[in-house]
Image (cartoon, rainbow, N blue to C red; front, top):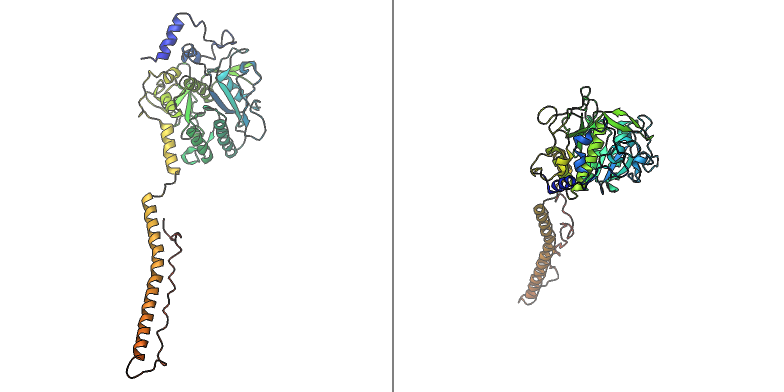
Length: 429
């Protein structure tokens, strides 16, 4: 059963009220061979409902050329964690012609000059420059970690990371600083989508941050929804997005030749997640990730596989609440994150043991007061007895002298040290 939103949309379209689903100012005909995902995802039925308005997607990449007509008004001032001091709206890629710009265009391009449309043209991109991996993996993952936190702190609801580096050497295949940032994003209800990598059939090593718990790891499929031949084959792949022969808009503003990869698949999937969040603002990040996997279209090997995960991501299925997903449906990214967070959380001291310790301290402190009181009482009794004896002798018939008789020595009444009242008992917990 379809949701009421989709039913209402269909009625409006059938009545002719919606003449076009193209964004305002867009070119009339998008490049057909490079944007096959428009029809594959049924965008003509999704855009009448939402084009992503109100949702910010952070793109952690090489920066974005915000001056391009296709991106006009769609790129917010962002940040730069490389130390270059930019606001993210300059593409620093000198190797691939503008990787960050290309990813942003797949999300929010209006197609005004190139005809290449983004999947969520009314969303906003927050560019965060992290570089292109030309530095060491150790330095690069620090940038990724800082970039995630920057994106969360500046209002992103979806984070797209089409960057990766080998992570087999790390626990949980995730550097600690990135894991901390992913936990930070999860606590702030932010979805992170990251590319699994393009070495399928060759190395298939774990690639961070896609390998990290709490991240929606995205593989790539072709137009026929079969796995793109080089998509990474790893156990943590969650879903797959359009990645085979996808259009490219470089930082020079020109539509380049088509390209393939999990980078494009991730950017498009992130844009699709933005559409779902815009249509369902109360849907949590955890539920969104769960629904994205549970409603995916099976692809490749029947059932879950290491290339496409649960299958090809389908926006309308994740968006449409008519596709029932049980609360108990598997959610591997968050289940892994929950386990790690539980292991890293120090156990709180038992209230019972604390109370017992406090009582013990009070007993010990009280004991320190009883000893001197008893000593004083004994001392007074001894004096009374001695005085009584002296008086008795003086009154005795033989008139014995007391000059050679003295009372016993004064007893030592110094209290033993049990610790000051309120002092912590060494070894107590």
